[in-house]
Amino acid sequence: MTTQSQLVVVVVVAVVVLLVVVVLVVVPLVVLVLLVVAVVLLVVLVVVIVLIVVLVVVLVVILVVVLVVVVLILVVLVVVVVLVVVLVVVVIVVVVVVVILVVIIIITDVEPYMYDYTRNNWSHWNRNEKLKEKF
Image (cartoon, rainbow, N blue to C red; front, top):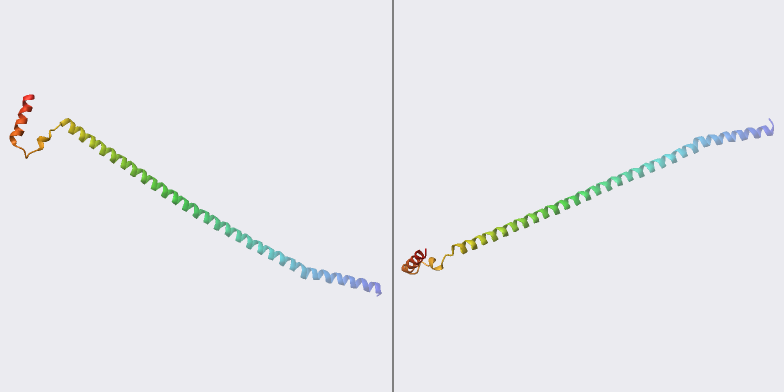
């Protein structure tokens, strides 16, 4: 074998060794790096999903609290309106009763001496007689 042939054999062997090293060392390292990147991306995705779920839960809780507060405010308003209506009705009834009593007092026009039983009965009888004479 000549020097030139020996040199070609050495170069071919070196290329084959280099290819073997690339296939056995570099490719697994690249695959390992890609797997690590995939795992990191998966973890990030899971964290994002968990954060979205937590955000949705917090928003739902806030919505429920707001709804409860609105319902309580509405209930208080209804109670206040009912109380005001009841108060107005009571005032109207009292005014009507007072007006009716005043009208009854005015219509009957009872003389105060009619209620004075401590007076002399003759005076009472005399007044009754005068009333009879008028009619």
